[in-house]
Length: 137
Image (tube, rainbow, N blue to C red; front, side, top):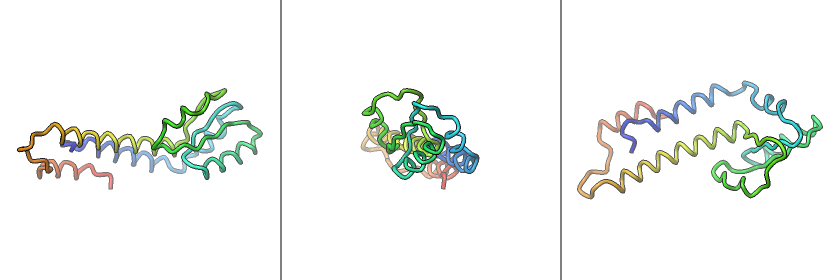
């Protein structure tokens, strides 16, 4: 447990940022910035198909990879791109959320493993109240 609610605060702040950045032209900006030989990483086949059509419309030869943000190590199975590797904003948002949640889980596991058997493992009322202030939902 994160006694001070830092993890919940970070997740909340990230989600506020992600919501605030909606409909700001990030996809259009990405499409306009790529060049032949670049690679774009997206979350799934639907997004891959959408971007491939947009790239064909611009006459660009851009590699588009659909890789789940939960398994980024799969990116290393592909050869390096000729140009830049660019992560789509939706992929990045998912990756950050997954990473922050993983850190919070890891901290909880460390606390449990490092605490003695006679020590209460449940959240104290004060810790619960602190966490409740920063919950992203």
